[in-house]
Amino acid sequence: MKTRDYDTLSQATNDLSEKGYKDSFTAKNDTITALYAKKEYQPSDLTIDERYRFEGMTNPADQSELFAISANDGTKGTLIMSYSAESSQNRDLIKQIK
Image (cartoon, rainbow, N blue to C red; front, side, top):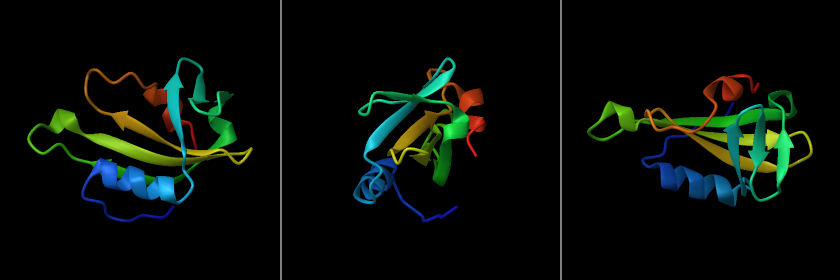
């Protein structure tokens, strides 16, 4: 897995978009959805290519993690997981991605 240091989440997201990670993934219930492609995937259909963690400036609850993900059909995008109580991502489903 490749790594690089970014100062901000937006900087990392913009750079990954330039690298071809154009779609946005979201993990809900039993599937992970590519929002623009309007496709649903199982975790076994996806690979995490890069991962970045960002710490909150003043509040540890502001932590987030950015994943650069490739699907087995060539779809590439990012998924942002917040560690706050309001996070709507299915963390258990994300953990199943290889």
